[in-house]
Amino acid sequence: MRAWPVLLIAALTTAGVAAWAVHSGRVAVPPEWNPWAPLDIAAEPNWLTRHKLRRLAKDPALCRAVLSRDALEHTPVPDNDLGNGCGWRDAVRVDDARFAPAFTLTCKAAVSLAMWERHDLQVAAMIHLGARVTRVEHLGSYACRNVRGAGGEGSRRSQHAAANALDVTGFRVADGRRVRVLTHWLGDGAEARFLREVRDGACHFFDGTLSPDYNAAHRDHFHLDRGSFRMCR
Ligand SMILES: [Zn+2]
Image (cartoon, helix red, strand yellow):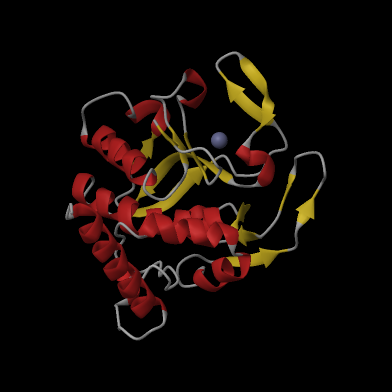
């Protein structure tokens, strides 16, 4: 008799027992390594982070519980479904000074934004610019419109139509500097390296991350969304 079917059954049984033990609480696992524990925005991201972000997208109550005011100043807003592919559900008003002026964003995207700011943006700013980012400059989130390509507006609704995306144009730094996607993306200076690192970092927390590398329509901003398509460019 071949050994591999027996080994496979043994491995699956062991994995099943281990999962049951963790899920039922019989084995204590730190929350960041427990796939059933809610996401903690302050905890260092790991390979379970994307799984936990996906869970929030399906569980509005869990998302609201995870998005603490410590992580991002915000207030919940009522659902506003306009029925034409526009409007929002499970959204918050982000009224945080670091992201002024205020805007409406889905809770799941707001959690991604808080994770990106804390674990990527500020780290990259200290490495490449030697100072913290004090303000994220943006074009806002909600717009009832279709996806824009190089040839104009297409036929598919944009993630902005569901307040599920934010367009970031640049950053104010504590030393008074201003880093802009339009003027600093091309180049090899510290600002360009910072912008490339924060674009790459956004891909860990958002589903769609589009930069000037994607097309000319994004030459002056990063598009960050929590839609159903994974794209990092
Ligand atoms: Zn956009």
